[in-house]
Length: 284
Ligand code: AMP
Image (cartoon, rainbow, N blue to C red; front, side):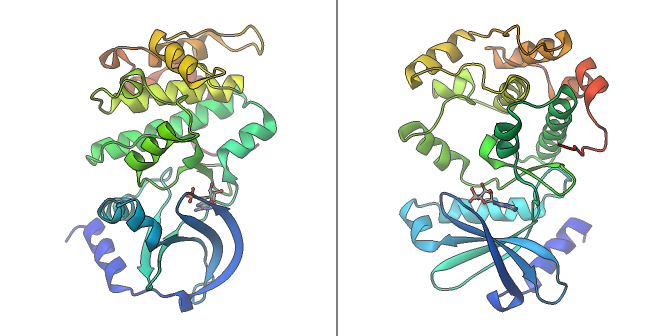
């Protein structure tokens, strides 16, 4: 039995219940439930407990998808992917035991500081690129990065939060108050798409980290759609951003998905080499 399978077996053997946790403060509220900071009674280890109401899951008919996503996330081991240690349920709720991301949402930090330094931005982009490369190596596909899913641990290390429900939450974003800002042209057009949608999103995030707003932002969804389809990209003169950063962004925001820079090439890009902290940690 390989280590991964053994660990997975361990996860199954351990039957968790609410009694195993001391409930602390609420950490946030998501589409499907609430998240609390809790402490495992035995080890005193802090973890995040996500509570999902079964009714909601049934309403959106995503029981099977949630199950699959939970299996996948709990089998992944990467410093930039939030660990899912296990789960349990009662009659009404499903409880996910997640790694605790002490510094919370990356986007809250971005809004607070307006924009990141080139060192911070490069460190986050390198972390995301590494995590995506690991997913692809493990044949985990369709891992689109959603900005609201990026969390920071106590050292400022980026963690991709939950992986689930990408299809559902995306269609929700389309139809409801969601934003198109992070979607690749092939996705806003509902065309077939592959891994390369993530590379586009890396370009969008890189721009937003440096300039403080996504590149195709507009008054209406229709205008954002038009700007994405035209790849209407411009770099404001302020703040002053290095030519290398702009080069990387323009090599990712390419309409033809087969021509976007690969994950490997992102890691070798001079801007990443020069600016990213190899430890992946970031002081803000
Ligand atoms: P979600 O349901 O995943 O959208 O989570 C709702 C909110 O709870 C997030 O936006 C975070 O602010 C917070 N949160 C979720 N998971 C964690 C975690 N593992 N550690 C810290 N905060 C979290």
